[in-house]
Each structure stands twice: as structure tokens, then as C-alpha cells.
Image (cartoon, rainbow, N blue to C red; front, side):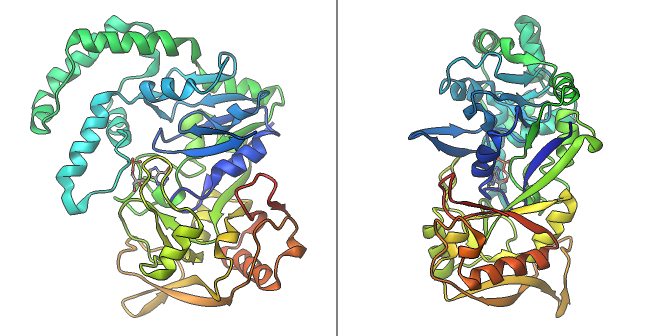
Length: 415
Ligand code: IMP
């Protein structure tokens, strides 16, 4: 059976957590394929709040198995901490033995480099994501499977420290002693080795056995290393194709692809954001949508829906449908704007150019509505909200499958 996929269509934080949680009930397995603990969402089940950064959302479905694929960069310390929220994870959580590790020094490099960049900082989450992926590509990374032989791994990391001594000194990073490193890696080994496996083989077997897999993307398309607003991006392939390299499924193994998108836009960190609203409108969206980062607590930058970027993202991911999240956040606005084209050097274009820095949004204005919060049927939405949604479908050339009208699992319209 083919695996279905959920992918963020904007700059992350689209509300994937709610949809994955909703859908996870129907899947036998949920798999992450990229990113690391830079991602994050909280899910409330039976009054208990769970903070998930690395562990797939399927963990809240007792019947589902969960995979952290080879394309994820795993901080053993962060994973161990997150695992403490749950009992009996053995047999429910499987972690790729070939996923690369984020060790403390990767995190310190991330933070030190951000400081050096000054006003050109990317605004990373400071979790060591970039340095861990850089070293993976440079063939100097450390894989989780190496935790099976801690002494050999310790020697390899010490050798890496020696080879890169000048860099660590320049960045004023204090490195652990051999003993400290060995002790830390031993703890990681003891806690994580029982969960390591060949997750590609596992995914193939599940699909061969007609089990349903949900591939859970992290971050969003506009943060993709190749297709996002480079260099203000994350270091992984956040688009649907990332699932192929990040889990080992092939393109033909992927079935339905759902793009998750908010009814407006947000972005954390630096980089271009054509529809950003700096004044009262941005503040009002931020307040109504509680737009503060779950991983770093940073206030998110807010603005109007960008149909040009969304159409681009939908095509790149091959979206079969969109889930429109947080429609209720726009309740009460008299007018709602949607970016339908960009203006660049006095010319209008309807596609995403290489550089979004100098584009001005061209807006279409829609009439607002009073209230959509808690609505559960499309016909019960105010007429103006229905018009807005139908227009989004047309502008993004993608049909809408799900509309979310509050954080509650039940306040969801299925079309
Ligand atoms: P990094 O992934 O920590 O290297 O950060 C690179 C960029 O991606 C920064 O702009 C971050 O704010 C952004 N980013 C990383 N993870 C997320 C996420 O889960 N949601 C939204 N933005 C993210």
C-alpha cells in the first residue's frame, strides 16, 4: 500500500500537528523523514499536553508505530528527554540507525555562527541542525548506529575534534574531555540502541503488508534547502520529495499528498516575507493566532495569504489537496487580502522569482466575515468565508480537503 504524506506549504508552523494527530488515528505507522528538534508542536489529548519535537505524532495513537527516518538529524539528548513523556515506547518507536546525530558541539557551532553573522543572522532555532547536516554532507557526520560501539565512536569524535581544532578555537567552543564524551555517549547508547533499526526495510515491509503509513513533514516548503528562500532556510529537504531520501521510499510509493497551509502567513526567523504586516494588522493576527514559536517562544512575523507562493509550493510538492488551518483567526476582519501576483521592477509576475527580497505583493481584497470559529460544516460558514476559500482553491490550483476552525480536534470541516 502507498504511503500518504503531509507537508507544510509555507514557512512552517502551519498547524501540521493538529492534522497529523487527527489523521494518525487512521494510520498504522507515522514516519518523520527530515529536520530535527527544530520542529515542534503541542498536542492536547484527554487534558494532557504533549510537546513533540522529534517523536512522530502517531505516538498518541496507542495502536500506531512510529519511525524516525534516516533523513532526520537526531539529538540523542533531546530525544531521550522527549521519550520520558511516554511509557512503553519499545515496539512503538523505531529510530533509523543511519540517521545522523546532533551532538553538543553542533549546537555550539550553530549558536556561535549565528552570533558571527550579526545582522545577517538566519535566525536559526540554535539546535545544531545546520552544522549536523553540513557534516553529514561533508562526510564527517556521526550516525546513531555508531552508538553500538561507544569506544570506537569516542575515538572518532576525538579525532574529529583534533582535525577541527582551529575552528573550535576560533569559535571559542570548549570541547569535552575524552572521559566526558565517553560517558555521555555511553548514556545515549544505553537508552537509544534498543530503538535503532533499519527503518527503510521496516517501511517497505509495512507497505508490503498493506499497512497504512503517514509521512510527516516538518517545517515548510519555503524553508526547503533547495526551493525555499535561501539562505534563510533550514538545512533539509522539507518538500515531499524529502520523504524519498529521508526514509527510503520511492516516488511511486507515495500516495495522497496533503499540503498544510494557514489562512494567512507567518514566518519565524529572518528572510524575505512579501506579505508581512508590520503594524496593527500583523499584531492582531499574532494575538488571535497565538503566533509564538513552540520551540523557541519567539513571536512569529505575520501577514496575509500568499497565493503565488502557495501555488508554487503546491506544484513542487504535488499536493492532491490543501488543509486550510486557523480560518477562525481571520474572524472579525472587515477586509481580507490575498497576494495574487508580485511586482518587481515595475513589472507584474505570477511566479516565485529567485529573490523574494525586492518583490511587492499585488493584493486582491475579499470581504471579511464575523465568525467561523467552531464551524464544522462548509455550508455553515459565512458566505464571504466560503467565497474566500473557493477563491483560494482557484488561485492555488489545488482543491481544499480540510478546513480547521479552532485548535479542537473536532472543529474540523472535511470536504
Ligand atoms: P534551523 O532549522 O534551526 O537551522 O533554522 C533555520 C530557519 O528555519 C530559521 O528561520 C528558523 O526559524 C526556521 N525554522 C526551523 N524549524 C522551524 C519550524 O519548525 N517552524 C518554523 N520555522 C522553523
